[in-house]
Image (cartoon, one colour):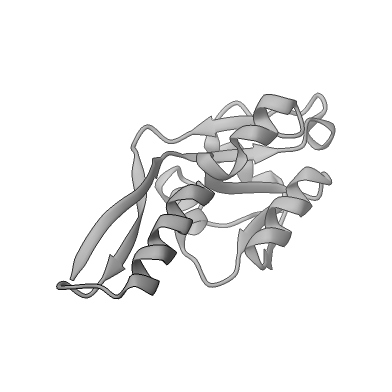
Length: 133
């Protein structure tokens, strides 16, 4: 296999400023009292939450959604999402989302292909994919 780094980022816990209001969590463990928005089919947020002592969602519960709807729900004030910083940095910069916590470790997304000579269509797709980030 050939693995090329597409993007390196950190994980952020984010929420709408209107959702948090005056009840801003002071530690990741405090997130247990809020609704958690989790992307279906991934373990990124659940691993991050467990790493930071949030093993159960507590009173808030967990809502599992497709990736694009997870961030839309966070923007609309329906809960807290844990996601890659690269996906939400523009929302943070604009004030649509508030960064509550940031992981201290970088992680990355990779383009993984078979080793060897690649067809022109694969090369074009990889180029397009890099341009999207």
